[in-house]
Image 1 (spheres, rainbow, N blue to C red):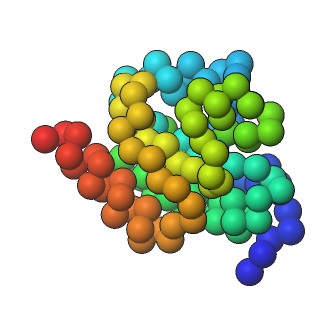
Image 2 (cartoon, rainbow, N blue to C red):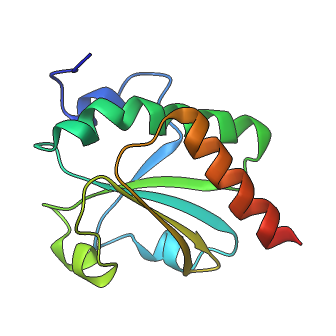
Image 3 (cartoon, rainbow, N blue to C red):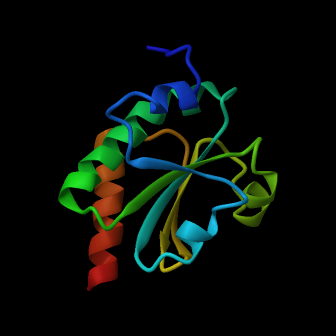
Length: 129
């Protein structure tokens, strides 16, 4: 069901604290991070972004428990156009997975929680081997 709130309003619920809001002033926190970072590019006007954000937040909550070393963040494309261009995040939502500051996987569009967990598990397992 469509939640009429913005992603910021949805993310401000008490259980959604694992997703960090990144912008052009603090993106180096994930770009220079030694480890994995999962970054979602979104816009508040993008209905699929807003509808699917709870799935992304639930994924972050899950990984906060099972693998807390993985960072989760979000970037509003309207507020951070330079980052949008830098990372070629044109289709929304776009999820980029970084390892040690390098993009190792791009995920385009809406995915279910099961799909996201499977993709992330594959990426993490491949990277640890």
